[in-house]
Amino acid sequence: MVEFTFLALLLMVPVVYFVVTVGQLQGGSFAVVGAADQAAKVFVAQSDPAGAQTAAEQSVFIALKDYGYAPDRASLEISCDRSDCSSAGATVSVVVRLDVPLAMMPFADSGHLTAGRVSATATQVVGRYR
Image (cartoon, rainbow, N blue to C red; front, side, top):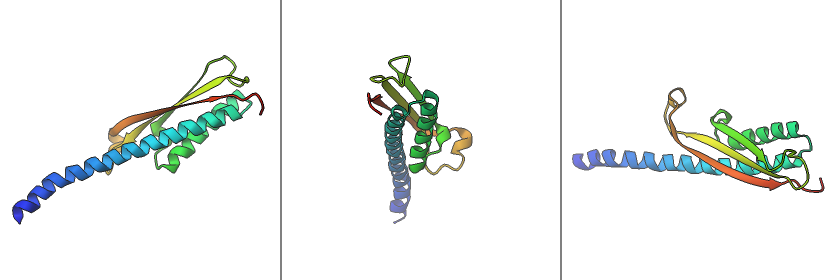
């Protein structure tokens, strides 16, 4: 009985923590995919490039908060295939990167401990008619 309890604790705790960490990474993957997709859609819907950048950043922050991640752990990169991103037919690509924190770590923020970095890219074409 003692040996079973000792071995169960010794083996099961790391396995459970590994499963939780993989779940955190999967949740982060879902978050960045949704955030990149929404940011690209919001960007091409705006006619003002400065307003489009702000709207895309806000949509990324909202999407990440929906999944429970702090926006300060994410970065957003927007690029266009033309100099005028708001012209019809322009292709806009959005890359969102997120540092996924370790699960159940009380001082993960101060130590900058992460389970990994996930990223996603979404591309939208600016429509002819708005």
